[in-house]
Every structure is written in structure tokens, then in C-alpha cells.
View 1 (spheres, rainbow, N blue to C red):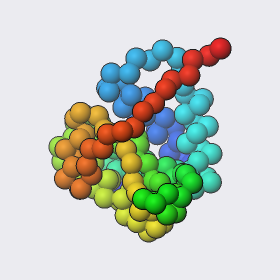
View 2: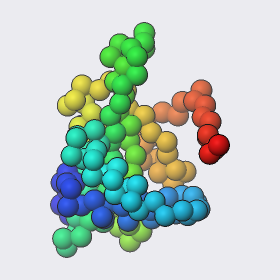
View 3: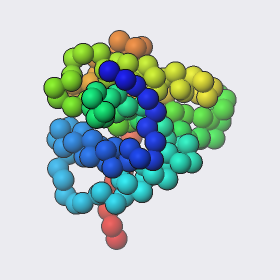
View 4: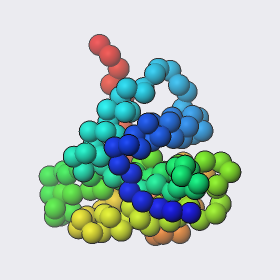
Length: 151
């Protein structure tokens, strides 16, 4: 098993794995998002606001991770306002329960630390929750969301 940072050439695979992840999490495919995903990954990998570490077996990407960077106004609990957000954690079925996701998670957490981020957030699937807890993530409540429909 080899691990490396994803690059622009990996974007088509990142798109496919993201769609598999969403589908397996029970999110219905109500539209084709291939172009939007492709554009997102390409633009943000190039401008370094999204990084992805991938696991490779026999020259094929079999697992992926993602880390987005953003900034809010500074607060008493986060004086820089900088937040890293973990997303896109996905391992193909036959490779699960072999420590691959844990290794990818360690790599993205190390990346956040290197960039001096003090807060890392994520939303976990039920299946993935234990992986995050083992590394020290805790459940926090208080987040609210609103979906804005087209007018």
C-alpha cells in the first residue's frame, strides 16, 4: 500500500470516489454533479485550499481523504479563525477494516498541524465515527444548518 498526495491527474478518480461515498451514505443521486465535482477538485487542489491524500494498491486509488481550509472571524476560542475541515474520507469496500482510513486520517491531521490549524471539524457517517474517535475527535453539538432552495 502506498500513500501520496493527490494531484490534478487524480481528479477524475476523486470525482468517482466522492459519488460512491455519497451514495453509500444514503444520499440519493438527484442530479449529475460530475462537472461541479471535477471543477471543485481541480481548482482547489491547484490553489492548495483542498488537499487529498490517497491510498494506492496496484497503481489504483482505493481510498481517499480530503482536507479543506477556511477562515472565520477570530473568536476567543479560536484566535486565528482558521478551521480545517475533513471530508471525502472513503475506502473501497474490499479494502475496509485494514487501517487504511486511519492512516489517511493521520496524514490529513498532520497536514493541518503543519499549517498551524488549531481546530479540525468534520461530519461523520455512522460507520466512520469510531475511526475519528480513536484519533481523539469528539462529538460536539450546537451546529445548525439551513438549506436554501431555489427561488
